[in-house]
Length: 335
Image (cartoon, rainbow, N blue to C red):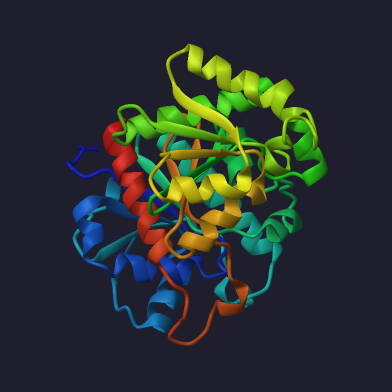
């Protein structure tokens, strides 16, 4: 297929019973999309058509069986139709094995296309972990699926919300397991992945702050020794290779400092330590990036929002998905 000036971004439809189809058609109804990328939905044409009708977006839909058949005409949504949802059996707002199986197949197809350079990036709509498990796919989430499908061993979740950027050292695990998993190697690896990602989008020398694990970053060992034994040595190693990194800092103040422009990135030790500030300051505009993969992948920072799914006219906000599309296009351009 002849390559064009704008990257091709494959948008996986996510859970058909969630808000994914709705936010996709709403995002693709915005004119700015067509200036930054050539989007193609990887999902089910019937489900996208239903969302198009419910939201009155009145987009033209063009179903294809392969990307090479896509026309990418402005205002016409290309749908790579995998035909794996029976709309008559779909119950909106409920986790179902059918939707879980389909959402996994969308991601697997997108990864194949990205690895083969048929598409330039992936933006994923939300899927349901419960529906995935009902379908027999026992993954904690998108991140682990993508790592498995691409054979990636070193990866991380990184979030963007306005001027605040956060990368996680540990991801989907219990808090007690996350604390046990903090070691010099994973902290150093996460610092490097974050630095490399920011360089790709234009930061010449990213300023990186590392959060502590314990209250007050352990207060000199009063509240734990992970800072002294694992985190500080990782920071020292990163400095030795020329990175502008400092810490560990108390997590209750480092995000305020980053939000005021002192740092370009915060390295958080566990999921909620990083995600709470991101969602507080940027819910509905935040973007999740899986870093370390051989492909570009972004997603909105919210889930399936089952309680909003399927409502007439729709109430789901597509802005986070829009931001994810923009960042995917930018990262693809920089590759």
